[in-house]
Amino acid sequence: MIKKLIALSVFSISVASFAQKISISPSVGYALRLAKTSPDLSRDQKEYLKGLKSGVNFDVALRYEVKTGLLIGFKYSNYSASTSGRFSVTDNMGNVASANVSTKDNINFYGPEVTLTNDAQDTKHKLFMSAALGAMTYTTKTGNITGKGTTFGAELDFAYQYQINKNILIGPKLGLSGGTLSKFSYNGQTVKLGDDQKESLTRLSLSAAATFRF
Image (cartoon, rainbow, N blue to C red):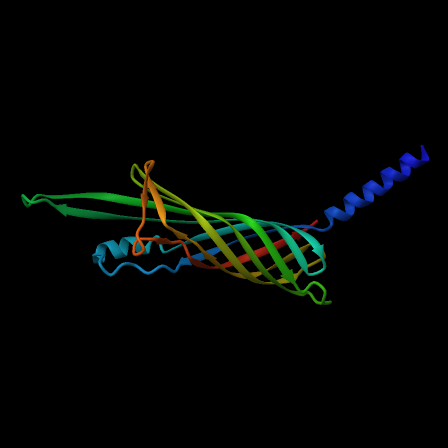
């Protein structure tokens, strides 16, 4: 009986110790896609696409502290943007037709992450540098047409956070996400993109971040 109590106590201590090494870090902010707009587009088309060049950036990372200053975990991020406009088309008979058009874009990332911190230093001013590699997906929807693509992606984050107490930290974060689509599917039909048609998913983000330690 005593052995069972000792074993249970050791197990409880181990679980508590493991839980204290877990943290979750969400952030939300603004992001700007860095891909250049084709100079061959009309002014109206460029204005339309401008609405998709900036949007909301959200991410969350679940981390485990391997040792002081080194964490491993898993990260998810999402970028969303939308735009709308009215376009007119003239046929060869001189008839003009116009319609309202709207587009919604989403970029998602999933992958393992490694984080370095200055936790070894006795300071409330914490610095974080994280790198993640994984899958990046892109979805764009205009009317009843949906385009999708998946590629290899990478994300790099630099953050400063102030330690409010032992369990809560907050501060700004600068992020860079990268990936390029070479294949794309429209309503289920796959198209291989040429070198001058590849879709860059690279974006720069600035967010408000927090870390919750358990």
